[in-house]
Length: 211
Image (cartoon, rainbow, N blue to C red; front, side, top):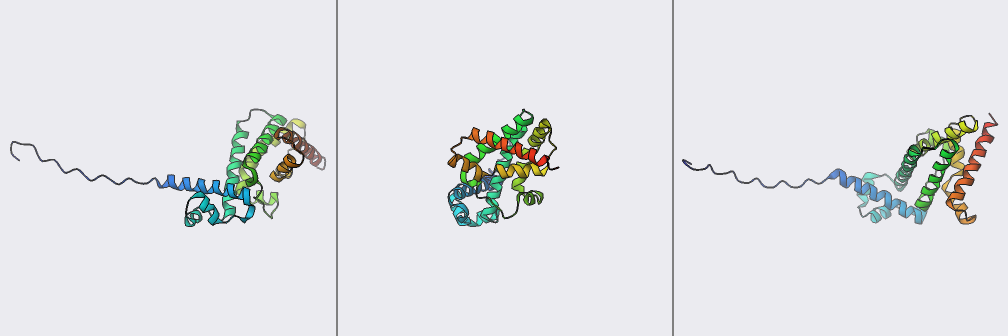
């Protein structure tokens, strides 16, 4: 147009908002883990994937896109608990027996906090078999305990027990036994930690005497 302004281009239509698919995916995954932990704590092994999906407020199809079974979800929950223990262990500044006792105390606290969801993750395979096969839900827990056990045995003059130390620890600090001591012996968390840690150190000494 002569002597005037060029006509402006029409405004482009607003772009549709892109959904944050990754955020939605992660949120649904976390909901499923929380739902499974809640239900398994109350119903045990009777929980079905449809129950978990309903509790998490997602479709059953969505639940199966994330996990193949309820057992797989619960294993992921236990992995998360193991990571929490590992974070605590890495941050602990004490050494030797004091560090081991602190990490054992945190395990007792986490077990009590999460309740029955810690009990219903059982397997027919033994602990060492599962650990050496690379069971993901045991790996973080084992990493959290390996250095404290090694540090405690070094302080006490025992040989480093390796995986056997984890095996003995697992026997004594089984969540079922922690709840049994709370409910039957009426011990509090600190008493449970002290007595089981003492029993564990005795077991390590007894094992080392066999070497």
